Amino acid sequence: MSNKKKNDVALENNVAEIDALEIEATQDIVEIDETVSKEVKPEVPAIDKHLLGYSLIVENGKALKLSPKTQNHVFYQIATQDDDGSLHIRLSGNEGGGLHSKEWVAVNAAFLAAVLRSDEIGLLTQSEKSVFIHKLSADYEERKTTLLNLK
Image (cartoon, rainbow, N blue to C red; front, top):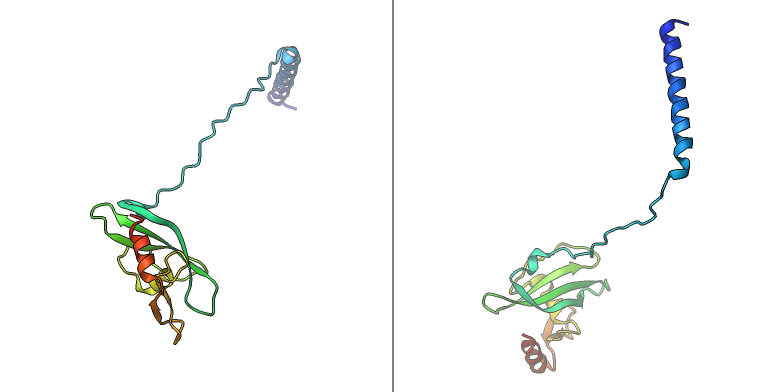
């Protein structure tokens, strides 16, 4: 074995001995701080950009889809626009999939009938002729007045 390799081995052995001796010497004076602090931040819900500029009247509306082939729902919100107080509706979700817009609209013909026929709103009912034909509910005027007073 060359002198260089012997010196490297000797140096490694010395370092190992020193480390072991230092560990033994300090073993009795090691202090462990058992205090653990973890800052807990409250979960803040994400801001829905669609709610900016609107004041919700109905936050979590739910309406059964019109098709007799499904028991899925569409979810909606009703709000007044902060600028002029006009009434708007938007679909906030669609159970079972399907494309829809989450934008506020004065009328959303694709699903508006389902919302207007929901138990919460109840302005429309199904016609006797077809599930896709609507008529005003028997208590339309009363429901309309109640809804308009929610502002």
